[in-house]
Image (tube, rainbow, N blue to C red; front, side, top):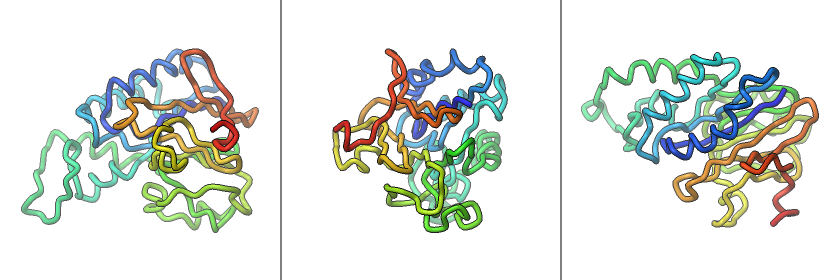
Length: 232
């Protein structure tokens, strides 16, 4: 299976379309999927356009071909801390604005999975309970899946799987403000949040589960992702 991964769009529609342009021509191919890792809203001006685009892709290809996971910003809406267009926290009921036009999006959020697995890869917005090893599915709470902080790096003991996640900008993980590409720690983690609000760029990761290879997808081709410390 070949799985293209995009995360942390945050309402930046044009940048999302640029990333999708690297993927959509391949979605008609067999054994190919697109996995979106959450945080589709809050940041840019086109929250609804991004959501409509994802729903359109799922209607066209099916939700088993275009997999959308829940992120913490979608969870904020579900728990009443924000609206789709407004990140400001809603602290009590009198400040809540019930926009009936949001109903279909909220219903969609409610049905989004919090993780997906294929081969030896776990796709998730934020992370898993790594101390649990191969019992991670049982041990990981919903809040960890969408909101784990800080990011962990290194080998996950007792688990022969890799984690692909977004949530935290790769510039933060690399401790390099200029780095917005895919971060691989050389062991168990690939992080793909390129902090689009700063970089204007959304990275695309391709996971070939049959070959156990991970590539950064660019206009010029697919480049094998090497550990950050080896490239920078």
